[in-house]
Image 1 (cartoon, rainbow, N blue to C red):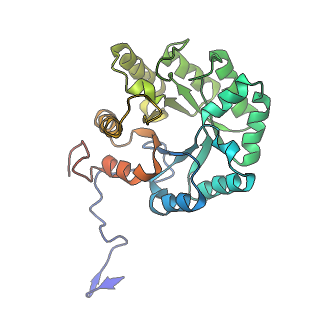
Image 2: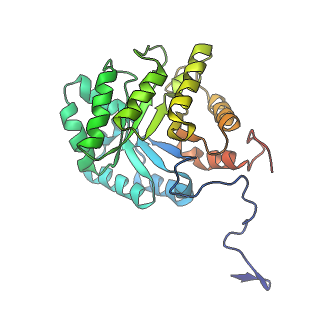
Image 3: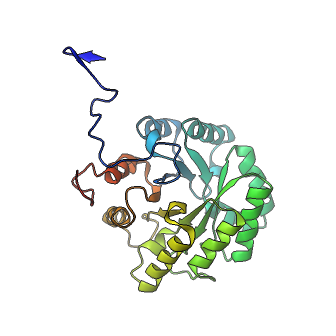
Length: 268
C-alpha cells in the first residue's frame, strides 16, 4: 500500500509496539476473558478487535445450561475458529457434583464441543481426592485439557495448602493452575506466602491469576486496575491473567505492552 509516494507498513503504527509480546498460539502471557452469556453480536465485537489478545474464554458458572443448544454450540465454535479456547466455569461442575449429577457433566461438556474444562472446589465441600479424580477422568477418559483452580472464595477455608492443591492438580494432569481471585486481594501475609508457593510449585508460566470482580464483596474497579498493575510489575508482561471483562481486553493488552500512562510499568 502506498500513500503520498511512500510505502506503508502492514499497520499504520507499526514499530510503535511497546513491550514485546508472544504471538498466538502462546504458552505464556495468556489472557482469559469471562463470558457471562455474550450474545453473538457482542462476541463478534470482542473477537473483531481482540481475538489476537484472547487465548481462553470462561463461559461463567452455569451459563452453558441457560443458552439454547444451537446458541451454545455456535458460541463455542466461533471462539475456536478465532483461536480462543472456551470452557465452562468450574462452579457448574461443583453444582453437578453436589446434586449427584457429575456423571452427566463431562459427557455433556464434550457433546457441546468444549475442549477445555475447569475443575474447582471453591464453593462445594468436595475435597482434594474428588478434584484429583475429576481432573484425571477429564484428561484420561474424555481427552479434555484442564484448568485446575486453587484457593477459596472469600470467607471459606481450604482443606489443603494451596501449593499442595496445585501440585495435586498438576500430577492429575491439569495444564494450567487458576488462582482464585479472592486470594489475590487478601491482605493476609500467610495468604500472600501461599500464593508465592503455588508459583514456585507450578512455575509462573502455568499459573493464571484470576482478576476479582463485583461478585467479591468490597471489590471496586480501581481494585482490579491496581491488581493488574501489580501482577505486571511483579511477574512481567507475559503473566497469565484471567476473568478479564470483554470490554477490558484491549485495556489489558495496552497495560501488558506499556502503551498507556496508567500502565504501571516502564514507559518506552
